[in-house]
Amino acid sequence: MHHSMERLWNGNYIKVWIANFMLNFSFMILTPLLPLYMSDTFSANRHTIGIVLSGYTVTALLARSVSGYLVDSYPRKTVLLICFALFSSMFAGYFFTAYSLIVFALWRTLHGAPFGATTVANSTMAIDVLPSSRRAEGIGYYGLSNNLAMAIGPTIGLYIYEHTSSYNLIFLLALFTGVMGFIINATLRVRERETTVRKQKLSLDRFFLLSAWRLALSMTCFSFSYGILSTYLAIYGKEQLGILGGAGLFFMLLSAGLIMSRLVGSRTLRNGKIVHNATIGVTISVFGYALFASVHSLWAYYASALIIGLGNGHMFPAFQNLFIQMAPASQRGTANSTLLTSWDLGVGLGILIGGAVSGATSYGISFHVAWIVNLAGVIIFYIWKKNM
Image (tube, rainbow, N blue to C red):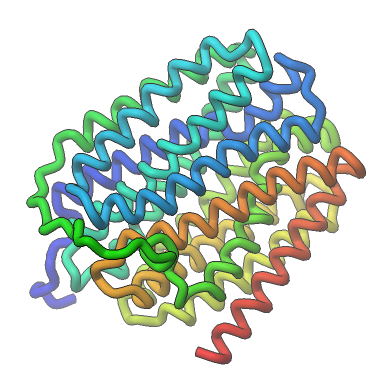
């Protein structure tokens, strides 16, 4: 490799990367446990669990669409730190939610807003501190911090629960990790850009990248299936396959797939093969969902985790690059929030519809729904690719 390439791993990028890991770890450590928490603490049924947990995603979604505009219009570090402080401190509230399902539902729903805003602010900051010649690659590596959090978070959460049955200990760990992430971001040294608070009339395209609507739609389908899977995995494993620790291993394998394909994918992204990467990713994933839904055995449960991981690891950074390419530089925040908003919308719908379907039928049926919607997303992507 020639040495004139700018340094990818500069100090600011490393800090933003670690802070993003902390942010997602504190979020992911709770994800597979909350359905168990709700059925243990409040004896909530499947449908109720679905409704309550999708609330978080709805507020994250609303916050993400607005925060793209905020990070493009106000000093980015300030916006980032305010959002991060709110997100982290709210974990303290979970200690007081065990008294009432209503209180838990409200608090969990409110918590989605700072999470949604922080993810947009943090990823936009990452794009800012990357050298432009290494941006596509850097975005690919940035996602690794999400994937590692996704691997380690649920695994540690489920492990602590198995050995202590203490939800409060898990809430405490989430609080601690979130605060650490905030402290790391507070040490960022960035020049503030010229902010763009111009007296523009607020139009839809300040909040949503209209040119990317087809890609956004297919991304929503992919995250719909992921929302069902990641939320109901632990409780399904416990009820249907008789395994409690299995979900932890599932997330480990999923993340191993994500990490492997991101490392391979970053090379091809560096060579500009962005659509190629996205195509491989969406095609691999759909097979993983089909396997998970159709074959009810331990080997299929674990093999599908690896396959879905390999697919998503190729797909997600490629999609993020496609969204950013379709936006002018002044709308980087909007491009990021459009991608993340479509992801959230799918996850929220997945949790909600998955809870309703499994309440009326079974978890098995809701995993079939996940697979069919994923296939629809692949078809939409292929149509977009043909017309591009």
